[in-house]
Image 1: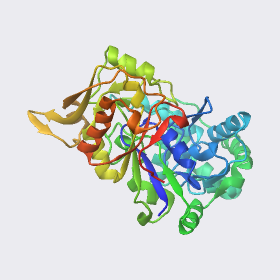
Image 2: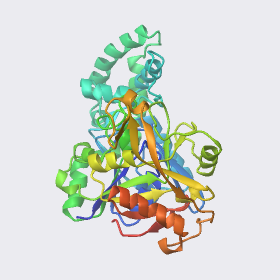
Image 3: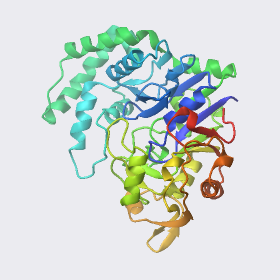
Image 4: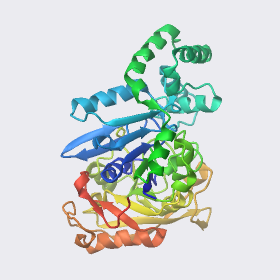
Length: 425
């Protein structure tokens, strides 16, 4: 079967967008299967930087079919702004399909997201883009879907029912209520732009799979932010794991057998929550600045940590990794000694699995092995053989301790700075 799922193996920001864009050159279809505009993919091509938040990474290759699947939550205003941005920069006529079952992010979701983050002691670190409240409405069965926009009478009825609830909540939070007619008219404008793209994307994807076309599935965030298998409650509101792809796209599980895990050569995290290998010193500052470790969607500085193989092996198990893509290997150049976390110390015991309780994870101390770094600039290399011996050893140690082969590694942000060790798609 000619398909692959690209998943982030850490807390997001691993470089999935670049790898998806790279692999898209061989793909026929690129499918974004979950999340919303709380995520960001930065893609650099021909010295131009593109920050995508909703659109699949394949849109820069205009001969690809790009699918926004039913597992996504979509802010129509943000989507249209992103489409216009690409048009203004010369990326036009991309083939886009939007699931009629994907849920819509409304202004009241955004207002409540920000308000809820101010309440209580534990801050999730949300991006305040309305993602969590939209997924909440989906589970609560009060959500409104993209396909509802195609039936105006039904859309008005659903919107009226939603506002009857949401305006009461807004009042309780001392926020301004939303006028039905004003919101309805606003979304009629979005409907006119997007209606031609809305369809049953499960039918579209399965058609291409049945024709043995090459289909590339990409998620947002990383598996450690999975609502089920991540560091709950400091997680996103959906599952970025490969296991969620059948549900979030409407394809059979038998198609999901080729999973590429994207990892940074170190670890980063944005927002709150436990982060055992985090450190904050001159080396962390060097990594942050060299790797431009600031959030694509928020601009927030990312927290820096050493590579954590407890996390990676957890992701391998719950997402079925069949290969690895190691990103930003060049960022580690010039660091004298590198650490890799191979286990945790918790209450006097050595463990190699992720605790389910986040407070327990906070009490874990990383158990490290140390490896010599390399001083050479590796940004111009074009093959594994050209790497300094210590960089080769670093990649080989990852393979040894995970049992998963490194199939791709990256030595810079551009599409051309991607080295394929073994074909993935």
